[in-house]
Image (cartoon, rainbow, N blue to C red; front, top):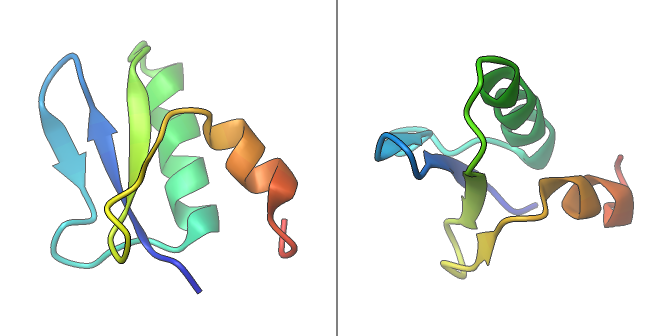
Length: 65
């Protein structure tokens, strides 16, 4: 299972660096940050270093979602 860090472009915040988050944990963290007013929130897959901007599609396409 992939693990992710959460990045907020407006503030250079990165979450999950010490302990990467599961897809579900990362998704909920993104929702929390967007509710706080942050607009540019993305995920980074720690294994592949791929950046995911469309977080909703990650959850929609996940077999565990």
